[in-house]
Length: 106
Image (cartoon, rainbow, N blue to C red; front, side, top):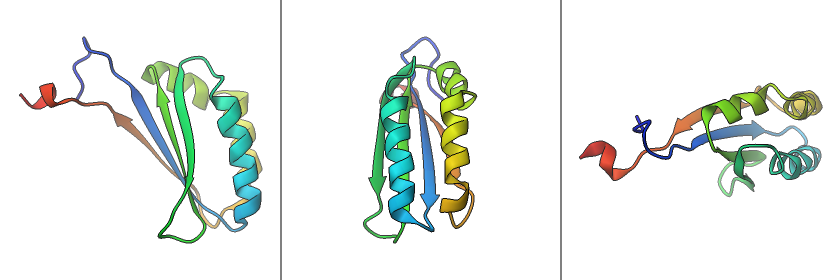
């Protein structure tokens, strides 16, 4: 939806439901720190739900969809996913969001 002539940020959310919350947070904490050093990464946050028990959210902001895709194919992402396999109650929900502004609706 964003005008491709404007600055566009790719936002990714990853929702994890933990079978072992402390172990999952340890894996994701390492992942977040290392991801922040990745080329094209603007920010990564790790938060725990105040409403749903054992739910963890990772929010990523990337300079471009290309940077985000490169990261998703990286060894760091593969290592994190592999480390989470036995720590989850189900597969994570992953969503890609496009930035918008009020100008998009004018």
